[in-house]
Length: 102
Image (cartoon, rainbow, N blue to C red; front, side, top):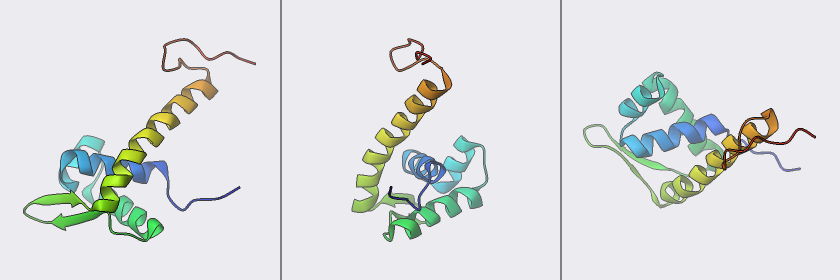
């Protein structure tokens, strides 16, 4: 089994930053500090070995080509993670039906 150095919280922070256009607005949306969001995104960049965002203080952030690719894939992955959590914990699935207990 392969292991990964990235985690779902990093992806969540990255998506919030790209959606909001800035680390400060993303931190507000996530109800956390700017430093926590910045650290999560920096850790994600380090884990992947690529720059994901171009940071400009007055103009916010812009995703790089790698960042744009990650944004698309991360959305799917996070949606799948939510569905997995609901299925395993007995919550409702995407279609609203409860997951069967086996």
